Length: 342
Image 1 (cartoon, rainbow, N blue to C red):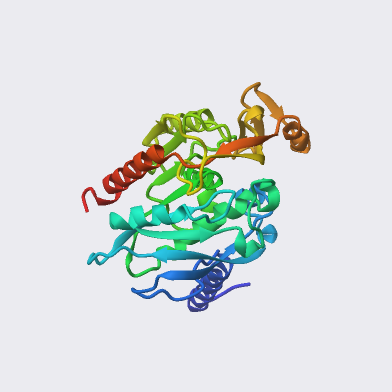
Image 2: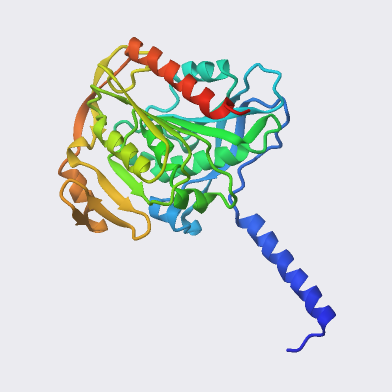
């Protein structure tokens, strides 16, 4: 078919409009409500629950059912026109009372906090006994959607939004460094400005050398028998070798959940995979490798692999000295990254 120049120009504009409209309709929109300068407290936002990490990474959106979730936003008391913010990601026990300590600690240094609820909106209270009750891909998407939401808040500086996570949430704080995962959700240059994994679970690693290279503070407990400190120390070194500014701090005598508001106790039904060693998923090829042996694990055999090494039982509870030290370390790190030069 032949077009005159004027008709071709009009046609091209029409096609461009359709492409733009399709992109808007298909992109993962974060905000479910317009945010005002004084908006804080409970905020609902739109997210998704990809069935698997493969569905997330490869953007198989037919397997991304929509999910409405929520978070609690707390703004610091400051006269600053724009403030930094940190997305707080809970662990396997859901949002627990200990989270309030971190909200207070971060607000105290002029940083807004957004505590996201991953489990409750999906009808789950906790995943301590069964981590498959909520796919890890949901944690990742909720974190990225929260980032996009906060970037629309009139009081929050989009260039100074970080992420801090605990245990299972600490895994999210690590993996949001991975650019292939971010680009699957966020179709712009928006990214987290800092990462703080706290007693993270690093037994399964999704790896690509394509990283955001935002600074990271990795906090581990020397006596953690739930996830153990070594896998996250090794992962932090892997990131550092790839160009990420990383600092790891190990707290003496600290068990898992050293910031908990409950006393140290033994959880007999807590599932852990420390005996399995680290399983590394290479994002580009999507192959799973048991790092301890170098064995490539076929997807169909993964269940059997973990069934042979997953065990039960771990200590979880407060260590006051470790909490007080980690609080100061986090505040110092946040001040350095967010306020130096601002």
